[in-house]
Length: 404
Ligand code: C5P
Image (cartoon, rainbow, N blue to C red; front, side):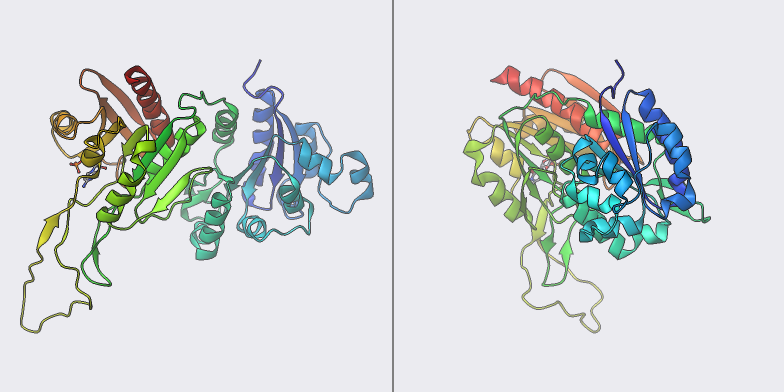
């Protein structure tokens, strides 16, 4: 049996140059056992012929909402119900905008509205179109609605620009589909997990603050994966621009003091606390009510900082039996500093990463971790933050179950 045997995939193709990759994508999905039916927009047919797509999928192409003969075969509602997954690849800026607005004036967007199946969107467009505020906002909204956003990839584009906007390669897309259908072991079924994520902002005056480069991606990946493993997840997040993972309760905070308060609030109900946030160690002693003015003739300025509470240390000392996991972002002597934090903060586990290494950690898509308990050490090699989150949660779940 192949990885996708029996899975029904509705591949929606919109009009981008990357549509030529869809023949290969369809073949590779079928190699894995998937049943693939194809819907094309009018523009898609300018880039790859329906005949090619019919030949590789083995089915007539659906392309019209108002075609009586097509509706007599498999009507659009039937097709929407048939799919286990709707994969939109390539998804152009136009298709993404139309999905966001909820259009139903042609077959593909109508199917997306009518289908109860999960929808994966693989954006492909010129990088300037991708970075346009409208497109970014549309993608964020789709992700918030629970659609899966796969890509885009980075690299040379058909128009000569180099950057994000390429359709993921067919082999990567097939891998995403396989991972999507792979059952997630319910290692954290019914367990309450609270995760802190992102940076904190420590106000100096109404318009300025002290903060750091944390993107929140690691914490958000942990929240998503813990939820998929069956946990009830609360995500306490500093200011980040990330969509809330599906079925996760999110509490937005700004400062370390606010994060501290939110973390201690429902601690009695919290089985596992994972402190992934990059909390500011210090905050300005005084927050000016008015914007601080530049003083003529004064060349230096001293701001007194005072210590913030250590959130995870306070959670671990609260005697609620909560299993506490910390992070240690270090630039040197990673093991020594991590083990010191484990003991000092009374943690069960600490996940250490070397933020001096480029391409991992802060504000990056990837991470690598070394996880320490009092007696054991586990290495998680450099990978996409979702994969790292998955591996870390497997370790956390095992250690948590042993401790209960
Ligand atoms: O001491 P350091 O800041 O390096 O410790 C990092 C760990 O402690 C992380 O898990 C971080 O989320 C947590 N932390 C915290 N409250 C602070 C500072 C750090 O929870 N004020």
